[in-house]
Amino acid sequence: MDSCTIQTPLGLTKITGDDNGLASIIVLNANLSEKETEEQVTDIIPETLQEAVYQINEYFEETRTQFDLLLNPEGTSFQKQVWNELKTIPYGKTISYLELSKQLGDVKAIRAVANANGKNPLWIVIPCHRVIGSDGSLTGYAGGLHRKKWLLEHESPYKQQSLF
Image 1 (cartoon, rainbow, N blue to C red):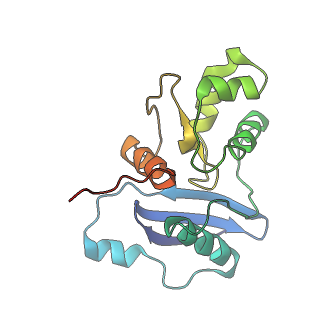
Image 2 (cartoon, rainbow, N blue to C red):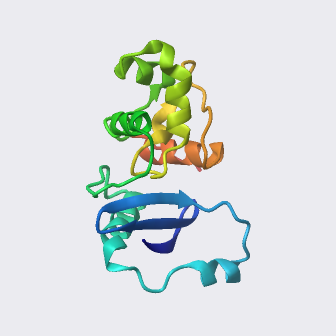
């Protein structure tokens, strides 16, 4: 399994995968000094991960709204079903956990759906950040709510303009 670590606007991000696809993209929560951060960034990106790095950078540069990558995350069949449904949420849109459960055909499975959402190993590429509470609140995000808020604002078609 190949891996690399890149710098993103939301912190160091570790990407793993091989010829079968991406296995994980996770933001690292470590509080590192600038020097330690520089030491962790991968100088040479493995060939199997170059396209993922390229597309993630495009996403942060606001030139990409959809990913076109081979994915190979580990999970149960139910988790994979939830993750596949997450990929249908359009860029710049959100849905509630309840709506997601309805789309999957079982309103009563809302907790299981939320749990599977939280276990998503492919940060940003499988857009679990686009799932919010029924009341519009930002609930539960493995990468931290501040990152979820940032990602939703990043994708928002209505950018806040500075008046001054």
